[in-house]
Length: 187
Image (cartoon, rainbow, N blue to C red; front, side, top):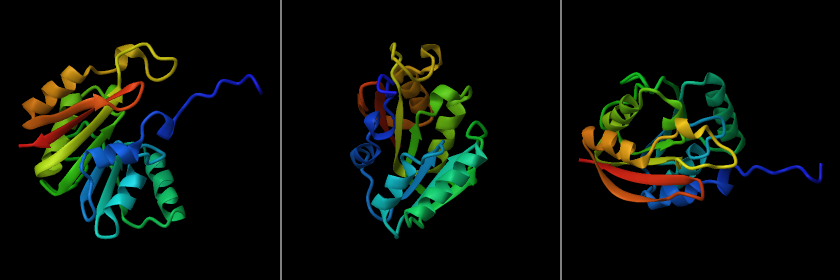
């Protein structure tokens, strides 16, 4: 056991709170974590940052992930997370009304999805005018863990999808040793 290799995860790879602050999260905002996952790595800190006057919509296609996230929210006394079962590859599947979200998040989602353009379009649909989209993805480099390199998406492709969907790149940055980050604004 002493020689066991520890694979970093969570905050060791991506500091969600720091990235949310970089994207301009504020109290009373409405946030959508699209592809929230089992741990709610972005949903839980977002819910704390927007406070009781804000709301986080946590969407995922995996129902058990939503159940685990809801349990974690209850455990931590967080009441402003609403889970939504949705297939992000289907436009409108989140059932979030048009132009109601201040900040949408796609964290490590696009490498798993074939219909990436539709996912970006869904994020745009729910964003208010001047709303922001935070994208974090695995760099297309050799890493000791993570998804296969061929499944990863280059930032240029994400920027192209977002531009074609009517969003403007505001910032590009390293989101950790193995990830890049992009912040777009809906125009």
